[in-house]
Every structure is written in structure tokens, then in C-alpha cells.
Length: 414
Image 1 (cartoon, one colour):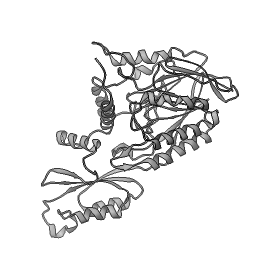
Image 2: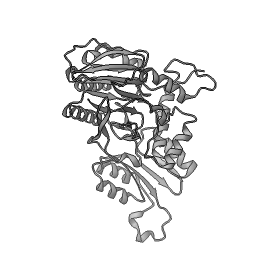
Image 3: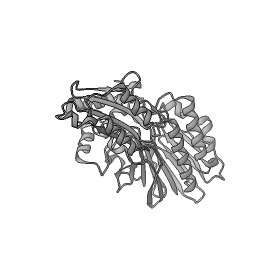
Image 4: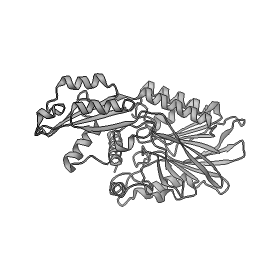
């Protein structure tokens, strides 16, 4: 059988103050086309469908229209789980109509139900239980899908006890589904969790392992079970957690943060597998806007880098030099930046999203892009730079923003 793995759509998300809805709509249409071109049997959406727990009517309409088209009239099973940005109950409530199309929206492992679909479909759900759904295809294949929506004690209605180890609890919650794996079935796990990848740098690895003592972090060993393929969501880069065990993050729908790793296309993954294992994993890139950050020393340099990169979304930081030895010989590097200079940059470069000016004299950043206050991302940037003198690691920044979003809406109960 063939599956399409995607995650972290974050419908309704902005980049700083820039609305990305039309780009999200375009990228989702590309996923529909890719799924149709490859005639996939199942689409897996591994959480963080929305940016906000209460999405707008426009955001919900885009999601529902997309999954209905992905289902190809019930010929393709579509399964989505709740991420930390999604309201589990709100997502699952849509099953009132969605399962009629062979679509299954799972907010919690205890509340999974299936529709008695027509046996004439290409793929049908035959049974379900705590943390799993089993399917049967026209080709005679049986597929067990173990599901783990974003796990937390609060969401799973459990009380954290002294000495509790989060990784042990995740294994316990996940085992409800993986215990249904059999030798004669295609076994797939889908989860929305934080783990780390095989190709991470030593610095990135240390960041994750340090954070694991405080935050909801899952070791690779969690996924060393009988799953032939594990589809993960939460990390926004396409990333192999374990190539030996076929554990992958598909990455996000769009690049949302200005960081070094967001200047490459996003992807979905196409996976061919049978009961003997994975046959192939292929990246299908999406045509999306790339995000690039430029640090320059003058307005002239800002115009230059924006002229050279007209197709990307840009963040420009002008680190203004005010101690030049020969200002008459370097007029283009004038230390004085006027409001007219800034307005000209915005007028001439519609791809400029965020503009910041750092003056040596003030030792402070003035964010020109925000309407009132700095965004959470820029607050984190400034904090880390003030404390350490360097930009934050992209993965650490992404984790901070994700955890902050979770913390705004729920806390674990003692």
C-alpha cells in the first residue's frame, strides 16, 4: 500500500505579522494533487492542523474542504490526530460528518470510532479500539494504525505522580495501539511528539537532551516496536529520527520562522510498504515561499539583498555602524537611518516581512514590523542574544514557541 505523510499545517498561522493563509491554501492544493498523482491509499496528518485551539471559520473550512478532496470520495482513508495546537474535542467532533468519507479525526486515544463504510471502497476501517484503527484494502492487505495524539497528563486525564517518568507514560499510552500489531498486518504508528533525529549536530543533540529533563520529550527507543513505519509531527523540518526503524518527521506545511533551516522547500513523504516492511520513502517537495534572514550594515545593503532575493520572504536586520573612520569615503554606510529610509525599503520590497534596526549607540533593537509589541519569536531572539550574545538555535527556538503555545491553554494537574 501507499501512504502520504504530512503534519504541522498550522492553518491560521502568521510569520511575525504576515498572514500566510493564501500560501497555506496553495500548499494544501499541492498536497491534494500529489496524493491524487500517486494514488495513495491513506493520508496521515500527524497533528497541529491549526495554529489556534479555536480556529476561525475560514480556517476550518479550508481544512474540511482539503480532507474531503484528499479522500477521493472515500477511496483514500484520511486519518488526522490532534497536536498541541489543536483542541482534541473540537477536532473529534467533526467525525459526525467526516467519517462518512472515510476520514477519521482523532483527538484522544479513548474516543475513536469508525463508520460502517461501503465494502466497495478501496480501503475501509474494519475495527477500532483504544489507540488504534484497523483497515482492510481491496488488495487483501490488513493495516493496523496505532495513534498517539499529543500526549500530556492533562489531555490524557491522568494525575502526575511523584517519580513519574514521561517517557514511560508515553510508552504506556502508545502501547494501547501497538499491542494490536500482528505479523500478518502492515503496522504503522502516528504520533505528535518531540524527539530527535539521526543527523543532528552535537550541539542540537545536547539541546534536546537537556530540555528532556523538563519538557515533553520522547527518546528514539520509544519507536523501536513492530511498526513498519512511524509518522511523526511536531518538528517542522523533514527529519529521520531512525532510518533503521523508519521513523520520520514529514516537516511543516510552510516555513514559519526566520531561521537558518527554513530556507529550503517543505515536503510531504510518500511511503510504499507491505507486511514485510517499507519498500521506499520518497520526498515530494512543495512549492512554497522560502524564509531568509539577512544582517546588513546599511540601508543600501538592505536594498541590495532584497533586490537579489525577490522571491523569498525576508527579515532584514540593519546593524548600524556609527564609528566609521572615514564617513566621507563611506557615505553609503551613513550611521543615520531616517523614517524615510525605512518607508522606502517597505515600498520597494513587498517581500520584506520584518525590519529591525540595531544601533551601536543604543545597543537596542527597534522592531519596525510589529504593530504594537514584539512577536513571541522576536522576544525570544532578543532574550537569548542579550544573555548569550548569539542567535538562538533554530530547533530550540521552535520548541520554545511550541511549548509556549501549549502553556497558554493548559497545564498539567497535580
